[in-house]
Length: 312
Ligand SMILES: [Zn+2]
Image (tube, rainbow, N blue to C red):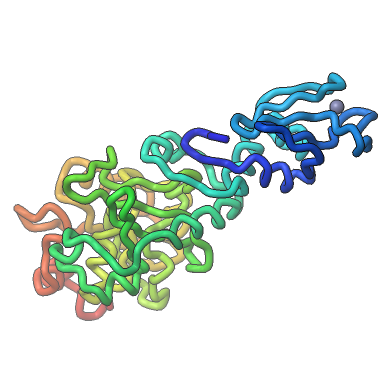
């Protein structure tokens, strides 16, 4: 059965609902209907499910409809919860680019998507990478340290996103590489609520009193590779409430070193407005001609973080 671009094994999903097939047809199965007063009639199971589409029908008149509706009725879930339940449990999960875009705004409830993220991550190549990332100066040791992998099917750099503790995988981020457009520079997996997290916060040393804020995940990793290990990334163009709270826990001085463009200046002003009265916010001006921190070597970065020597 297809759910968006996901392929779900109907028989297995029925098993997960506690509905074991009793009769097998050429393209359908029958299970004991869980709804009517004939529910326990194992000899004449009354509910047929088409394997290809997941459509179901109780022949004693209890109802019929889509597989999502069946899951929703059996589990007493809302349609949205039932859909999530199916996406997580429904066997093989196939990611399509459109699907990522379609679902990126969905909220994660607790960590119910974690199994799906881990499944996706486990499939990505650790053997291969793309010259794009090495050409930009990232070392193999850095790729390993951050768990960066390569997706051969949707050619892209794969970066795991963890929560602040580093214990939970809360999403998979794909970074576009030249020649293989994703429709966005960075794409997060369906169900990932990236605005709740700061990229790299799980690696912040916590005892420096300082936090450096940059924009993208690769900016963060670049800074860490150069020894600026108090760096975290916003992963977007605005600072969320959750990110604001996380920053308050990481340090008393915030260095803002966002991109040298209008979006960056906007983000910079926003961070000043939101945190200026609570923390010591220091705006870092990138030199003319430098688009972001990834274009800068360590010496140059040390110079612009004037108090650098004392702070990390
Ligand atoms: Zn029935």
